[in-house]
Image: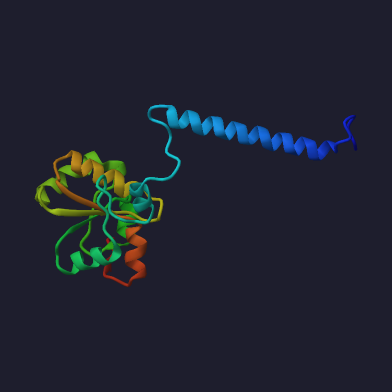
Length: 168
C-alpha cells in the first residue's frame, strides 16, 4: 500500500519505529550514565564469580574437591541445614543436623559440641537450595567465625560416592 507521498506504509512504519527505539535507547543510556548510582550495564566480576561457584568475600564457598579434602583430613565439621527427616534419610558421614527451620532450637546443642573457632561447612541439597546460606549466616551471627557454604553439597557428595550415613 502506498501513502500519499508514494512510500510503502509498512516499510515506513518499521523505519520510524526503529528510529524511535534507537532514540529511546540513546536517551536511557545517557540518563543512566549521568545519574549518580546508575544501573550497571554489565555484571560485576564478583557476581560472575558467584554464578560460577567461585569464592566471594561475602560468602565463602567450598568446592567438591575442598570438601572432600577437609573431610578426609578431619579439618571441618559438616552442618546439614536440611530438615531433620531429610538428614535422617541420608547425610554426609559425621555431619551434624542444624535445620534452618528450627535453628534457634537446635543451636544450643551445637554450641556445646563445637568450638566457635571450628571450621564449619553448611550444606543442603539442590543447586538453588538456600538453607545452607541461611544457616551459615546465622552461625556467623551467633559467634562462629569460620563458616563456609558447600552449594548443592548433598547431591554432589552422593554422586561422588563419598561416605554417607543414615539415622533411624
